Image (cartoon, rainbow, N blue to C red):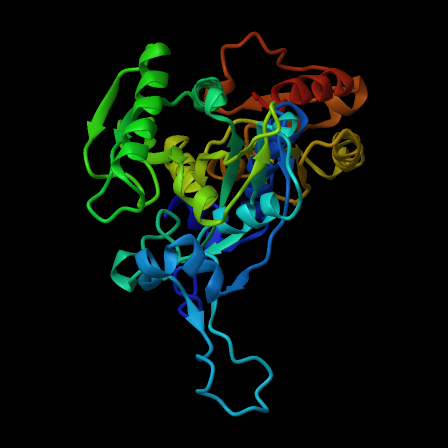
Length: 405
């Protein structure tokens, strides 16, 4: 409801389960996506890729999804022999519901050495899952969505240190949003791939990482993915509700099914272990959580509109335009309200739009080269000058607009 009121998102019956991100919502989406990409690629040793949307069913049969996940996939086409020869392509195709099989293909596309590991591949491509209509729920459960997805190809010895780094990453990101979180260790489901010895090994590795890092966790027996055990994280929003977001999953099965190999230190040919991980989880779901968590009052770095410049009268229009222009030149998302309305009305509208910074300009501010600030509640009481110069105001907003991770 808040997302609609603030003009962030919309839905339409012609695209059930697929959200429209409107201009303000697209800014929010972009900022979250780029913040995570920068954290991983610029600072975390990841490489980013973009992979196809649809694949031959042979891929999904190799990965095991055709047997374990086909009901949740969008597929089309026909088996060989069921169509006329002149049809261009008679294969059964499936829209990807997850990125992992395509990342297996990337790893397998060339010879690999232990020197390349850990190889961390991240991908924010579009995914589709055929959720039943009754299960759809706004942004929290969609048929079309993106994940801040990544797969880490590691040696046996690298599992625990990589999981330890991921646990720290989860803590860092959620701390930036003032969110507490709870960890859950999910073990082998009844419908699983692989033998019990590998599952024992995988479950023990995740359990050791949690214990060695002093993290309390809840054991969820039988809730693991069909290819491996996992650690899921429930975040707690501002009003105490819990949402499942981040996940760390250990996988011995897919590397084996895709016959992935690398050359070890002694020239022996070995199979890597894969760690599946996402921190936000679905960006759509995480945005839904943030909308409620902040009640639409996003921190400056995320706010679609960071500053609204409000003119008192037509006499200060030139100064208002100069302030807007200077802010935009500095990379600040700014809107100028130069309408011929009372200033109190303009302030109320900006307040209802959850704009963090309101810069009021009248004749006195024009003469002094300043702005008069009205701050959103969460910014008050922080020793901010009420009438800074335009230059100081720009520096102030840019400081508060820095990404927290």
